[in-house]
Picture (cartoon, helix red, strand yellow):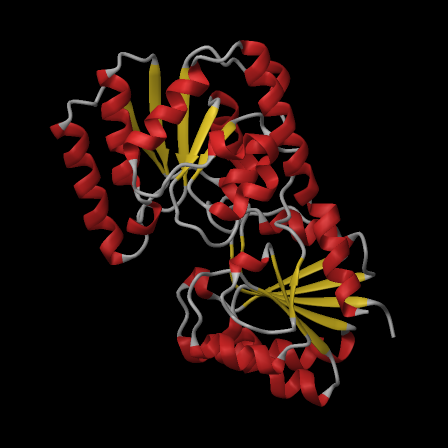
Length: 349
């Protein structure tokens, strides 16, 4: 049988701000298999090699749920027999729905998953899959011998800009969904402290609200910026397609991620790869920050602590800042796509 891989994912779209990176993963998989079949809930714009075949369930055309289910099983019956193994990306429901067919044809399923919540679907999927690949053990709170830590899989060629990076002023960035778990209130409150201390800085918020509660949170944030009179220092950029996000990293020299301890956020690694100095409150990054960990990890929800660390960083020489940036960039390269995809493929063995 030809060595083919079937991938099941939510979206194939290079412009998507949340899942655009996965097109790079598919390209890398295509280097290791004769053919790569991709069943996706929806598709957008992408360029992929000739040995990659994308089958959309049709969500991008707003077809019915019944039509999507019909398409899903139609493609499964066509593609599972032709495939050596199955890789399901981020959706336990895909594992559960496809398991009767993959089981019948004796195909191994590996699920890629990282999320703080442990759902009933995830627990059931864990029983059905061969392995679960994840960025770091902290990315999953599920207790299972099937969980394998493989790294995050970032395109380090896309995110490499240290030679052009300037570190004089604080050009601060945060990237991701506008959501309460991102704790952007602390981000804005940090800006208030920096402004009061008369430090030279600019803060940018890249991302958009997605869930219903996120929109109310965005209103709260914009009101807070107005209350603190920070309009000159804090910018809401909104949606930036994944194909353009490296430009934002390249224009910044500091990235702040305020999510609590848990999985490793991909945006932090992308920023590290571009030479940004990354400040986080997630203790999972301690092993990647080396001797700089205490300088870069702040207490969750404590704007004063974050502002103090930013001020101390700002006082360093350009040479010291570049040394930090180069160290962080080297750490990010351990999460490169080729390294991670090779580990996932080896799991099938």
